[in-house]
Length: 610
Ligand SMILES: Cc1cc2nc3c(=O)[nH]c(=O)nc-3n(C[C@H](O)[C@H](O)[C@H](O)COP(=O)(O)OP(=O)(O)OC[C@H]3O[C@@H](n4cnc5c(N)ncnc54)[C@H](O)[C@@H]3O)c2cc1C
Image (tube, rainbow, N blue to C red; front, side, top):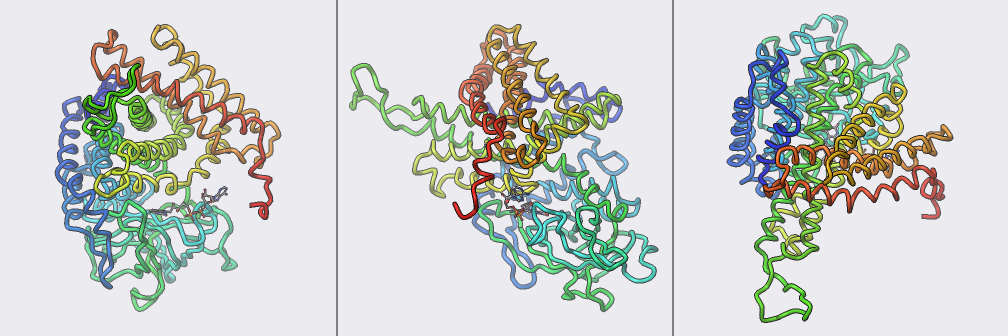
């Protein structure tokens, strides 16, 4: 089944994306307009991205002392992406957008992620500009966000510092008011920033006229000291090149300097940078300090930044999913064509018989079905979450609030589950290729290397797990978890009435009870140290239960569309669902065991015993 037909099925037969046109915001849309977007994105991904995926891996970005050089193919691909209107796809018509549902935008971006994740499809630029559309002033929107939507400028997110990754409360970049009249600057209160930002993706390049950095920094308190914790953090727009109120470049370079490029395991088509802010390499008005314009209120920076987190995390989850999917398709193709070995019959092997193709071996089928169940299941989850984003923004108040809460609980899973399991899919894709998979003659090793990032950035696996068990399942008196439980039970009840699915429905209901019991047992002592010591196994079990639910719901839709299972794609979906229930869901027992026993084997081992 091609990606397009999988996306079509999930959107139209499962998620009923067409019904979104009943919302006033999407009234001009129809299946035809959605399909036209997919046609365009598929074509650009096929022509401008996929052929260059290997090239951007081997021709890493390099700094010639003045500029960062990227292959011409990256320039061409990003121009084509911007010209397609995708950077502002979900924005209002008045802002030059298409008012496309986020569900459709997320699905359309999947084509680029599969073709070449590291050429990049503007996720950072769109996220940066979307944030400004919510928290920026009218002029900030006009000067910065709109120029990002058009592709003239690009955007970054500058959170991390060499000494502050997971723990953002420890950022030390400082922002001081720039002169006595700093508050009367039309582009926003003007500050001077000094500090170092590490790991900044797309932090330096020549792809666009300007780069708009969104930077977290601390404004010192009255005593000149930085306020401890995240409370002290504010958000600033720091353009690489200074602009006037019409968005024109003034010819003055801002004091942001590239300290160096990071050379990465994968995702090499995107630059990754250490940036020095305000070290005096490019003084502005004769003075060291990067000029930054405050966004929103002082000390509210992290709250503003979190605005873009749900969508950014769905974006990361989708990227992980599509890398897994790319490996699945590559290994499926390889397995269909590689002759190796012969079938074992009752009389042993007949060496004179023609060889089998490896797809005929049960173990290879196992590896292919595992990939299919991980990747198609993950894609369904991402699109489900994207649909919740649309519900949150356009549904009636109660449904919108439910969508918000469900997203809170599901976002750590949407980010982390594909990062772990679609990476595992990439590993299986290498395995299907045998020794060839371990070489650079086939694309699967690159997919694995590219995908390895996703458990690290946008909150590591460990941090996401602590967010899930330490915050999300508890928030609002557990209302989000209760809502999710109700949705899972509703699917299980419907599936109980379908003979093909009744066994899975019972298994799902039981898994849900196990998760619920483990959640309570983890917190039985009320001590975070006890509960969170096994947050990752908890997230693995929670994630597998969510995926089992998603698969059952998808299975119901597949049988609704083709009750007799006469179409191969229906057999594929039912087979992938069955794989998940037989081979994957039973794993949750082991994961939850340590959670509910509050097992401290790891936590209590003294450092010197390692
Ligand atoms: C290729 C790449 C691109 C990136 N792009 C950006 C970007 O554009 N902008 C940006 O701001 N950042 C970016 N990052 C940074 C990324 O978000 C951080 O690497 C990540 O948040 C982890 O921080 P760290 O690397 O300092 O690791 P650390 O925070 O030091 O973590 C190391 C390990 O310790 C664990 N750990 C840390 N604290 C705890 C805790 N309290 N409890 C339990 N375990 C803990 C972590 O889970 C992890 O396994 C990027 C990183 C990479 C590699």
